[in-house]
Amino acid sequence: MSWYRPAGRPPVDVIAFTLFPNTVEPMELMMNRRELLIKAMVVASCVKAWPSPAKATGGAAPITLPDAGMAPPTPQKRWVALAEALKPSLVEVPYPAIGVVEPAIARDAPAGYVMRQRESMDALAQRTFNSGDSFIVDFGNHYTGYLAFHVGWSGKSSDAPVRLRLTFGEVPGDVAEPLYPYKGWLSASWLPDEIVNVDFLPQQVRVPRRHAFRFVKIDVIATSDNFSATFSDISVGAVSSAGVDRGRPARYDSPLWRDIDKVSIRTLHECMQTSFEDGPRRDRRLWVGDLRLQALTNYVSFGNHDLVRRCLYLFAGLQRDDGYITACVYEQPAPRIGEVVLIDYAVLYGSILLDYYRATKDKQTALELWPIAKRQIDLALKNVNEKGMFTAPEKDFVFIDWQESLDKQAAIQGVMIYSCRQLTALGDVLDLSSETDAYAAGIEKMIRAATRDLFDARQGVFISGKNRQVSWASQAWMALAGVLSQPLAAASLTKVMGMPAAVRPLTPYLYHHMVDALVASGARAEARRLVEDYWGRMVNAGADTFWEAFDPQNPSASPYGSKQINSYCHAWSCTPSYFIRTGFAKTKGDK
Image (tube, rainbow, N blue to C red; front, side, top):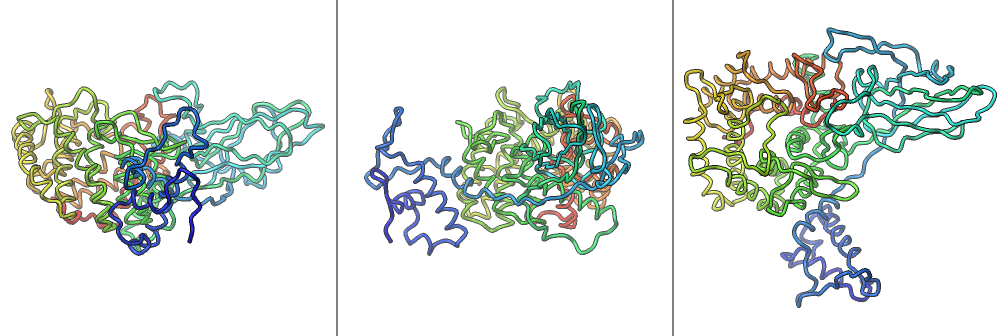
């Protein structure tokens, strides 16, 4: 077989063997078909990017080949190329709107509103609409995709465009209340509405921007005195890369547990696009913390391991200059690095890699990305002082939760200990324990500091900060870190849950870790009750997908200063299915 090769470009086999220098046998004999296709795509992308001397313009630097052939790309570029080769194709499925609804105030409902059926879609198609008219359609479930509809006219003459405002709602309040004036601190460009002008009627309209919604409100801003607008064939082209849920239990303990599992899986399904997005409405990007929880639930449902692997490669290929991975990365229009480092996210990269290995036994990828995981820990440990306490750096940040009043000193101490243990466990399964032996002393030093300076023996709970704050976050992460014995950890967790003054979580992200800590401490019954109480309340409020933030005492709370900007389908809230499908069992191998 001969290869076409433009002048000045190295042969494909040279590129392949330079990209994969350990390959000493024909590539197709050394990997399965899937791996061959992925790596061939990486090779092809390098060939396409190889500059031809005849076309090199604009000061493009010439490529100088070493004696052995072409200079290999940097590991970061190779990882990004591998990630792009793993990008999934999205399956689009059409779903019709099922009816016209109207909101009714329900002050005792966490969502604030309930939707009442008004008329059928057939009845809607017989109606006409003039300037100032509006209606709301219901799709019956949450969908991520592209709205389409047919707009016609009735009257003397369609002599002007029809101007529409489309408002997309994940929950009833999104379409029951005006989006403006908006006073949140995230950009108003995230608000889920569109102004659409249709110049010529009749017309089939497809909104080019992807939205996430169950409800759509259509406001007719303007027609003309000579015609009215008509609407029919309203549908959504829904997209996801999730595939089929293969892990659905045969039975559930109750209808509520069934519904919690159903809503969890729907949440994950909607966030699985070309990466694990944090929210299909907002922010539509890949975050480390969300990825960790999404991947856990994915392993017991859709089993889309390649999507996890793609995301791991994206973070590895888009490191900051010092080696830290940023809290998020962007996919579009091309992969690029995020703006900030959240240390508690970065150090959990090794935990994600360990979970991936446990689910897939893909040792090759785990070994390849091991240095990235280790680098996150090594960098973060520079912030641990001689007494064994983590001290917050000036440059980077710690997240833990959106709860504004939360003191994070104790929680990040627990995260550091937990993450070091997870990296050590990863090193053990990869036969790299010689590279992690040095962490043992550091772990013990941090544990001694935590028990000495942060544990209040009189109260039986961990305290945080100069004001000795007691919070759920501190107890959760110290329990996951294994700082106390299992009985003492369980006691601190159950005690803090009964302390009215203790700072509670705002987001399902921290509630997940509280549940996980209860499971790890042997308090399975309490873990089940917490899932049933917290996520069950969202189900009882009519949630189709679980929300980014939910405070049962203040359901309209927002981390961003306005509930209009909240995401009501958010990745970090999907883990009840993980607990349900693993039987609230402690992860094998955890300390």
